[in-house]
Length: 274
Image (cartoon, rainbow, N blue to C red; front, side, top):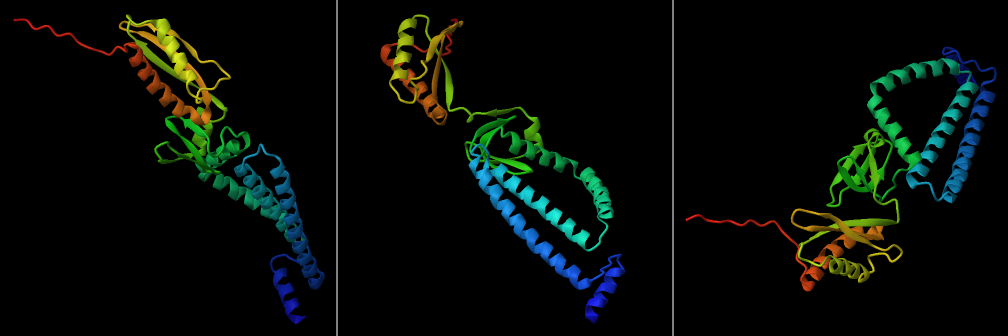
């Protein structure tokens, strides 16, 4: 009991007054135990709710859970301090002044955090999407509060600050289930345009890569100085985009060669004077 009275006297030096030290300590212990149990229950319920919402990304789920956990812990600490008789208003004022100084010193980092929050909330892309951010292009590997990590198609890792991601023009190539492959082919003026168009239709019908739901669009784009330029626009599944592009380029060229349709190329005629 003397030890407890001594502790109580030491707390009195800091402005903490306990009418009944034992009752205060017991009440504090109960608050901590009950508070931790309630936090565990709240987090468990929140996990179940977020799991039912399939539209939310895993990164956003994790952020929401961690944010709620931190808020709950802060509230529990505030209740404990109030139980001990601490003037919370003074602590809040000190933390506010310190927070303003820290925010000024870390404004760029805070801009990245704000950008990360906007990405997690608005979800312009998710993990695995193929995106373009300015001059950078790659698949999303990771999204956190400060950085977005991309892996390029030749397996280079690019980390981009979220502040830059949030203020840049972004193209998501994986958001839609279908994509259109746009190609151009040039044929000689002596070639049969109708025959060339039919060959391109046959190539598209000869592969399952080109979707049947939408007919390919094939037509003359322009009459160039030395060639007739034809457009080929075919639809495919997003994951088959590159394979479809390579297939059409290769097989249209092979079919033109078999049909005797000439693809012009730059050439030069040289005359020699005696």
